[in-house]
Image (cartoon, rainbow, N blue to C red; front, side, top):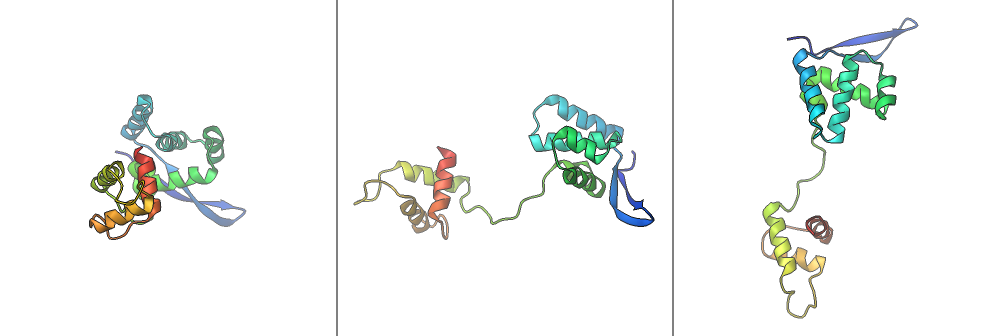
Length: 158
């Protein structure tokens, strides 16, 4: 099995510049990337990352790769770095994005939809987003819930 990649330092006019990451795919990795691309069932971001790795392994310059694939040069450099630092899986897949946990899981969403389809409370002509949120809190489904979260969940499911 070959090396994942190298971290080299580029010199320009006698001074040290930014790091440059060299992608060196193994035969197995190259075959896996080519196979993934042939299937045609990849998310666009993952497809672009696979294309970047294949082009980088082929010796293409970042500017050329970026121009051909329609991405920024920084994206190419970032994918190279991710490959060298963490391997092919790290380069192809996204890290989890920051943010809070979802308030409603699948069960909570199902209950929300069922509640929204039911008859509104007495004295109300229809369910409002705030009424639904308050009812889910009252039923101890969640500790707190905003009407905007209710709106977004219902919009997703309808």
